[in-house]
Length: 113
Length: 111
Image 1 (cartoon, one colour):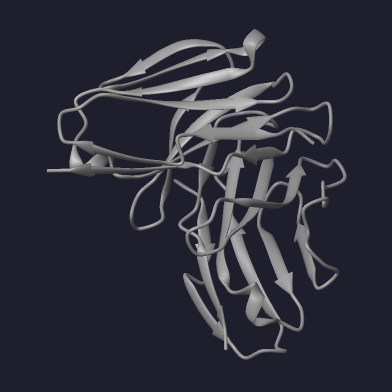
Image 2 (cartoon, rainbow over the protein chains, first blue to last red):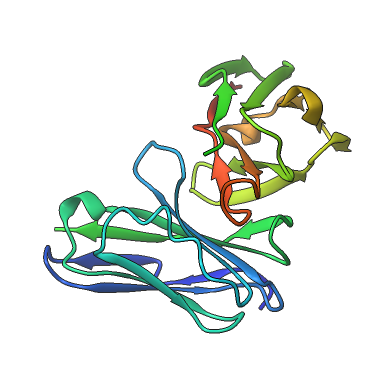
């Protein structure tokens, strides 16, 4: 696609429910990043995919968080048993290669009530 | 992992003023990027600048990789420059080129 696309734009969920967030990277981009941004805060690294290499999961905050990517296309970030502290904007970025110029999607605003 | 520090944390300017934002990093980097997050939350890539100097209109950036810092210059600031400016670095010494961000500089330009 023309840019990085994330869906949904907004998600309100009840505490304890599971959620899936989706990221469509720019076509041909092999690198994909997920970040979490709490209100008024910076970007917290979650996970990085690069081609067929094993993903760097070092930023995932707990085992309730997981992410998948099929080849060099769509990625989904799953949060199980959501907690109020998971409320944040989840941002996805892609680049044409590891270390290349990165472009961000518009984010998914997650609210856990 | 690599540490990224940005200064100042907050900056208030009168429209038309110039400013310099700084990004220090704790280790060698493969690349460095500057982003602007507008008040609606969208992150825009301003510069991809692992070394040297680049200019884009009223903005320019310089990275001195050997001294582990980068500077973003904003000249003749406008109210639309308001937002948060982030520096992000990648270093494959630690983990696979994942991109790490500084805490940002929040810029407010007053008319």
